[in-house]
Length: 211
Image (cartoon, rainbow, N blue to C red):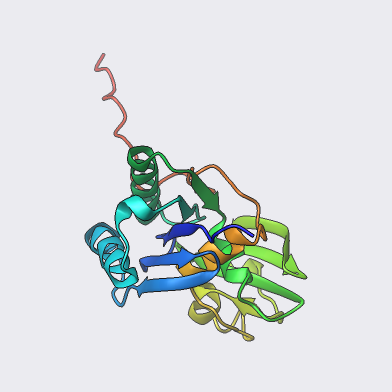
């Protein structure tokens, strides 16, 4: 067998920044943000810190894997732009993965749901059986998706009345992101954002003509 590939994993699809440096499936260094909504401020220092902890240089990276969401527009964009920019400058592949699939990879159950915060009192929801996504992701109101099934993801913690059987994890792990790509356990996607709805921030429309 060949040497394990050195990967940088990034996920900014939730309110937290998640970064990991892995050799194959083995995490060498991990950064889990302790503060919400600081994607722009935290991501670059987190990448530098994990590289230092792992005893590596940025030129040692052989592949970059990034969560493509679904997730809020601003945070998701920070991670994807960073991943694509680094991939271009280093001339290494950049692989996208559905962030809900990353959460699902760490759930110890046969059938379950993954629900993450979509804001606007909605969740991003997908259903899984034997580790495979069988439906979704979609944007839904918790009341319309209420279930007694096991539910991973932050959405289960935010809406306990609709999702009473919450299980871990609540956020995608960057180390798990590296692992599932190394094991070919998920569908590899282009590093493009999976929004599922129009961004919150839109370009202003041209002013109406005055007759």
